[in-house]
Image (cartoon, rainbow, N blue to C red):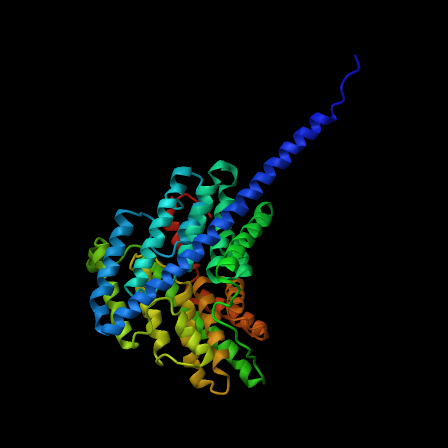
Length: 434
């Protein structure tokens, strides 16, 4: 009998391999679609919560003295009691989840339960006036969704978490390039060739869902300004240095608050996190009264008004927003610092614009945003790409890039550790490596 050729068996084996790879790609794309839908729904919920708080302030601006501390206390209690590991930004938890090898420990940081708690409690924080954003929480939610989707592919857990985090940034801001760069620069701290294509596919899927549901848009609208003349270029190092130093001080404060507190009073407060959260909420309320109610929430509308010059916030907005964001960040309630940091930077740029009066105000606002934001997150490439994508001002690419690099360098002088990676160590065993 003539022996049968073996090539059909080889083809079958190859088909199976290709099929398995195809299933993994489909897994990432499906997860990206889910992350995009969740991010859009989260954004709509966050807007409704901010509108609800604004309605309460319209009745009486002093109502924040009661609602904000009470809301902070409830949020902190629920985060500790019902949704452990949901406090804060969420980006440190996603970073730690990628570093962990123990599956049980990883699931405590990125699970559907954590994601649900993150959405609910971030919304509560915005409803009671917290100076927080939804973008960091969307990163943890995206990582959790992808982790849940990927239970059928145990070998891709780290890549799925990275892709979910990147898709969360892309869908939250409608900034696909920033999402990809964030995944590489901040989440991965390296370019992983095995998962790079899958990360991009996930970001594209999430972006397509966002486009389908809310359309194409620039987060802060479109600006069309540029720098003219040598004197105007002095705004670049000024905004970079001032923004970077303040951003570094902010990060250092948040990192210090996450560790042991010195003194008997510090230890007493650390042992009573709900009370401390209420005190932080009271501080935010006082900042709100001092700012005429402008420091609450994400700061989105204030940045838009500064960019178009329609309604400028008070001169001290940048400093008061910084203090309110710091109090919100160390309080332990779920909430991010992306949007509030951009608002702080815009306020700093507006204040510096009083000194450099010859430079157009929108230019100072954009440079202030990127300088401070780069100083806070210490991810200069992500910072300048996200600001350019959010404003659509490609004429300022080079100045924004320089201001971001200067802000990063200035921040490192006062805070040698990146905020997200420093905070991620709180979720890792002592012998874990990054």
